[in-house]
Image 1 (cartoon, helix red, strand yellow):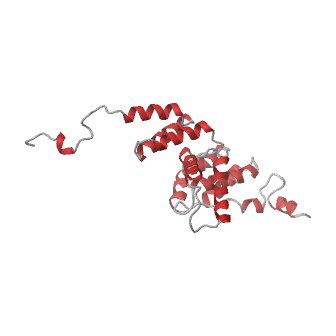
Image 2: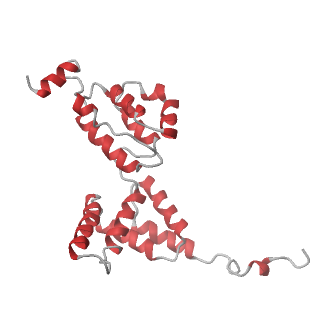
Image 3: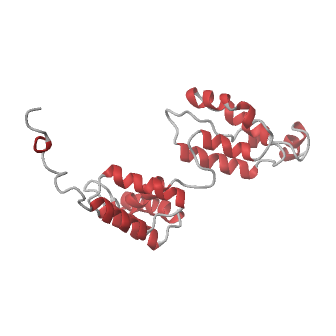
Length: 211
């Protein structure tokens, strides 16, 4: 008897979960693990998981979490153990991920590193540099970002808006599903305009004398 059939018989037939697959369910420690990497692992395991056994996967995911992550999932236990496929998605969402999506902020972090950090260091060998560049660009290409997406990001990056303003624009654009050149242009013109001429003067210039 083959190993596959043995595993199947141990779990109740062809619709069961093999021991090999069960051992691949990822664990999550919020103080150590990256949420996006965890999300991608869960998505990969779920693609191979029997679709009629979502509760078993969710249970394993909950038990594999540590600290505050486990406590948070425990609070939503009744919601997560309802036996639907959406419960698996919900586990990822409660831990800060977005099922089937890469957060905009993470996408543009990859763009930043690939475009502006692909520079060989003085103490870096040629092979090491090429390998690092390959990883950086492979990540960016996997995001399938268009030239228009990159144009919007580079335009925003090169503006004189503060880091917080730039981050806010990216997060706000996430709900629209796209960081567009039009949006970035409008924001730069709006936030860059000086509606209050004296706003940038030293604070003491705005104080009323005698107070």
